[in-house]
Amino acid sequence: MMRYIFTFVLITIINFSFAQQQTPLETSGYKQLTTYAQLIDYIKKFPSDKIRWEVEYFARSVKGKDLPVIKFSKGEFGKDDGKLKVLLFAQQHGNEASGKEGALMLLGRIASGELNYLFEKIDLALIPQMNPDGSDANTRRNGNNADLNRDHLILMQPENIGLHTFFNKYKFDVSMDVHEYSPYSQSWFKYGYRKNSDVTLGTLTNCNISPEMRAFSNSEYVPFIKKYITDAGYSFAEYTPGGPPEIEYIRHSTYDINDGRQGFGSLATLSFIQEGINGRDSIHMIERRSKSQMAGMQGYLEFVYKNAVKIKEMVRAEREKIVNGYPAKIAVQMIHVKDGRKLEMPLFSLSTNSDTVVTVVDYRPVVKAVTEVEKPAGYLIPEENKELLAWIKKHNMIYENYTPEKNDAAEQYQIIKIDSTDFEGDIIIDPALERRKLKAPEIRGNFILLPTNQLYGNIIVQALEPKSHIGLATYKPFESLVTAGTAYPVLRLIR
Ligand SMILES: [Zn+2]
Image (cartoon, rainbow, N blue to C red; front, side):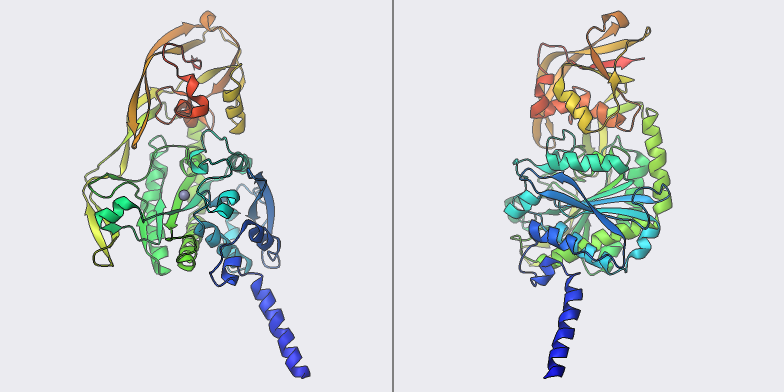
């Protein structure tokens, strides 16, 4: 009898120590998604005997949930300039659970100590869940019914304001945003095929982002992660929205800077988006979905670890260029164009119930500038425009009160009329403008000067030019900036 009790106690102890590293999803036998409360509980019980970590709460959701980031470093997080600073965040969209579940599995693996070698070269900040309100309600949007992944430019949502404040504290060199894509739409069903890859990966596309950085992502990271994910037993494809083929063109996502990838990418951060396949419902195939996402995230850490020195130097050089006002011209209208290649797209045939490959002819992988503007020395923001001032502060941009200098000149836009144009299938404003020069004495009023020779330089131009397809005026809170028959209130400073 004694022996029986002893064995029972021993098994309980073993199970307990093992259970600490199992995620709530794993513990449920893949039958229950991890709730916000369970996630917090899991993090609080995270063991610290094999790895140094600390948790920071960087934002509070609309419905009052504190958002944790787990920071891993061999020393003091973010303090060693020789280390590559790596950000990984998941589940901006609440109904895309596998990013969060995969991130929690990755935490379990880190806790085991088997990935400790990574922290010789990198400091890692891992955010398993950006949108707990949407997650618990199984909705895409947050508690304000806003799409967090369209909010990175205007920064209206508390979850994103917190994320960007956290980003600015450490100026991460690398970031990845983890999502899911849904392959089950009506248009694809009618087409007879659907996407079926476990994991897809998207790189930076906006043509104002350094060509070197974009080329490095496409020629180095994409083949690496393809092999890594395939070796782990999962299928991989490049992230290619649009379609179905030859009905709508296939592109490499948007060039907009309002998402979690290009928002940080425009600050010369080496940024990626990873999208796993969604289920027919939230729990469908969740074990495979989560494990394949975790494989992608682990591959990402492996890649940045192996290339830490090279990436660190590339990011430093690119940021230095932006701070020095480079490039001199910024594209504010762009289009997706072909480059002669055809895409061999892995798809699932609904008629034969098997994986196949479809050759896509209308494939537009390249983003090309259509309208460019010269970068001014800065923009003059009327002091009374509180919305713009709040926007500048939320991004932690550098600004000062404008003091006129003798040789200053400015350029002012007059908005003649407002036409509309197509932007990736959406109809947006396309104002007809006239630009006139103001000499120093004609610059009247009190202004805030937002200089472009700062890390935000390229974002500032794309946000503030009234003709920009992706500018602030295309968003409801800022639409009054562009009103027909008026002068655009923000001036371009020439000095
Ligand atoms: Zn998403």
